[in-house]
Amino acid sequence: MPNSDKKPMQIGELAKRLAITTRTIRYYEEIGLMGKNNRPGGSTRSYSPDDILRLKFILKLKNLGISLKEIQELSDIFDINEKDFTKITPKLIEILDNHITRVDEKMASLSSLRREIVDYRVRITDYLASQGRQA
Image 1: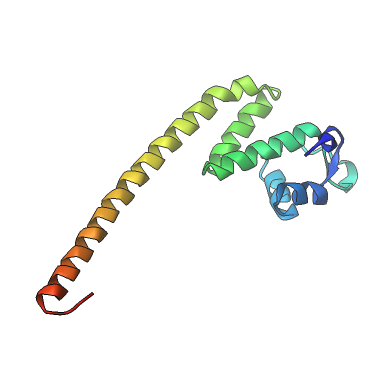
Image 2: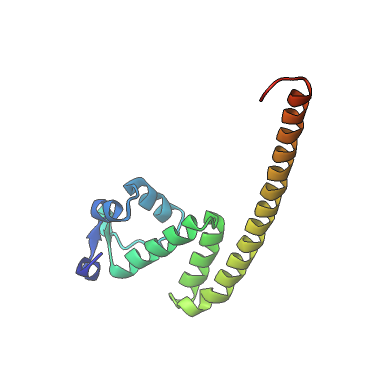
């Protein structure tokens, strides 16, 4: 987003620019990920540059596979500490380290599964070859 990040943006435009739905943004607001809502009297949703950065951060974490619960923990720390990013950094590092461990475990499991599938395939093709058939 070029210089348009400097002015408030309506929900529809923001959703379009970030390739998400307005419902996603509303949901993130409902569960508190977007912080305090400054929409007096039910007026149209409008997002400041800080709101846009926050939403981009949420989407980045989600894209990395971080759970909404973990993102909520970060959001709570961020808001409690008056939006001081340095206060969430230790928790963010902890969450990322835990996620790396889970990814490594999944990769090891998938590698093992792949070996089992290859071995099974070899056994089947060997059996078929011994029976005079082709796979």
